[in-house]
Image 1 (cartoon, rainbow, N blue to C red):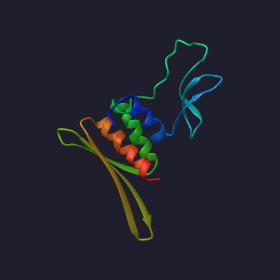
Image 2: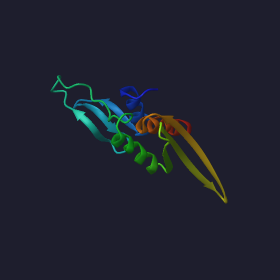
Image 3: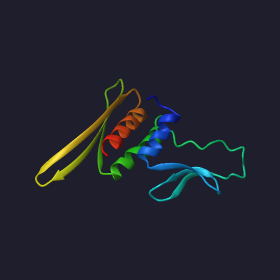
Image 4: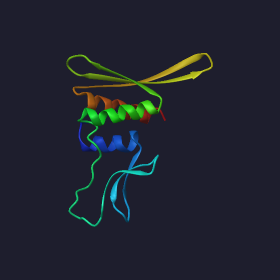
Length: 128
């Protein structure tokens, strides 16, 4: 999947745990863990466009929110710039008794935000 709003929505929903809601007070993204609105607008102003999630797949500051979310889920993230693109590796380490078990998901893209989002979606989807 290429960078852009469609990928950003998937990341918002699957990785960040947000939900797009329409209720009596307004419309926007809500963090399902905290039940707090991330972004919202009032129904009283119909000229407001649909609220898009942050540009996770195209801006590094927004992509870094994804990295921080993964870290809070106990995952380790490695980013490597090879001069032509970015490889992102995400590790989940489970320790049972004395033997450890490590699971890895990775992605490669020309830009770091895109690689982060692709790897994050793999990690969240396949770790369940």
